[in-house]
Image 1 (spheres, rainbow, N blue to C red):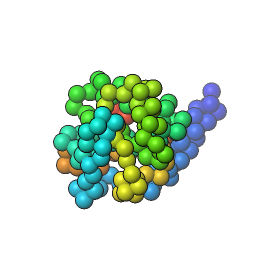
Image 2: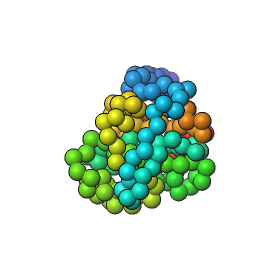
Image 3: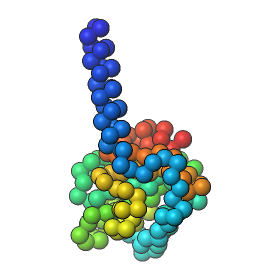
Amino acid sequence: MKSIAIQIIVFFLIFQLLSYFKQIDMLSTDTSMAAKEFTLPTTMGSDISLTPTKKTIIYFFAPWCSICHASIGNLQAIYEKNQNIDVIAVALDYMETNEVDDFMSRHQLTFPVAYGNEAVKKAYQVLGYPSYYIVNEQNTVIAKSMGYSTEIGLYFRSL
């Protein structure tokens, strides 16, 4: 029993260390996004600003990313269950807009999905998919993550 507990602790520490190194090149928390304001076209034909008016999860994905397909449902659940949190998905690294439209339709997304570009990718230091930033009302990054995240993980990061 003691051996199993030690293995669990070692696994947890290795997981935390890998998560830290994976996120080291992302924007730091407490970074103001005021200088990085973007307005992007959405799949619905309107434009959306990446400057939030309330706490917002900005989710960067690529339509070909299998982890994005697996985790997008968790983001949809957060959007549906939490009125105090906005969600914006930004598609990157796609060849045709219909790839993004198909991704949105396949997962029946009801939150805004924007067509991103290289300038947004560079400004937000997106190095892998999916990448999440949680930005508060003052347009400051308060949390970040890269890779799969559960619904509860997203919720706790957005508190």
